[in-house]
Length: 73
Image (tube, rainbow, N blue to C red; front, top):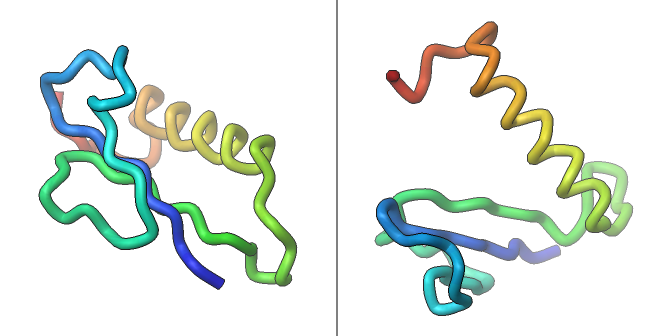
């Protein structure tokens, strides 16, 4: 199992591929980073649908502010 990272820095538009860092090792110099494991806890391959569902759940948690007050307003 390996991890795949997608990272972006604050202040870039995200409209160009060069705005992102992709790789299999952490990009510690980026402001925001997403780590996606090749497989889940049951040794099943992660799909695009799995990732998109997780991102939507994270978005909901951040926007609703029901579960966290991070990041600060």
